[in-house]
Image (cartoon, rainbow, N blue to C red; front, side):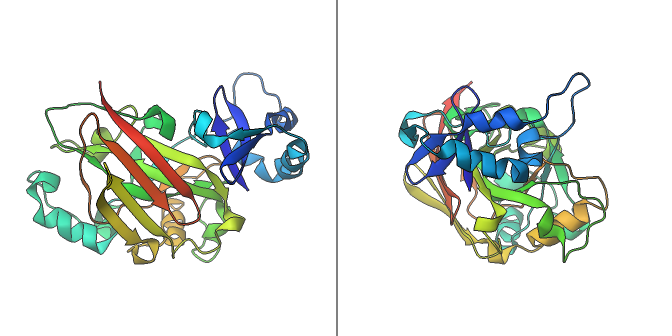
Length: 285
């Protein structure tokens, strides 16, 4: 299934260039009082909701995707886990480009580990990116995103993909500078997710997907998830030895080479095999 959140938090089942409004299926979600759970309830209950979504789709109104506002496919991520320099070609370009390095040593992912981004930076593709610190370089980074579907703690590499609910496209925007990654990448609007969540059963092995990004139609990034230094299953297993991954947690798996600056007025177009495409407007604060 391909599930999107659109307009005023409605749920859509994507079919081609249209969606079916299946918001009625959300009535089956559990009701809660304070304190609320620290998980995303749609993602946590996606298997239970599947037959209800398919039932709601029968006779549902078909709406052109071009006419809706696409929100982040995950409404309430508990955390955003990110993998730095996880493609060798990006490691090489970061070492060679002072604009990326900013005077710092580029440390291999096996040594530096993972980092966290603020959930307040998450939004959907339709909202666009708002450039902050416009006097500094602000870069685009396309990434395959895995969305965790059930609690994962100390899981094995062999079983790690069983904990993935689905995948989507991610833009890990970053402002270059001396601060830690977490700070520079946690600016509002700097984690773009979309266009929808494609459930894991439609993807199978996530290590053969082509990622392509252009800015104003000009090619920037073009690589394949088969070139990840640490594979998705290994990343999830590794992270789960440090903290429990919960349903709705976002896992950004790293960007390939070709990162570069964007400025207000630019349009970022990004696509990943089997996951669709997003078009993101860049604007001034």
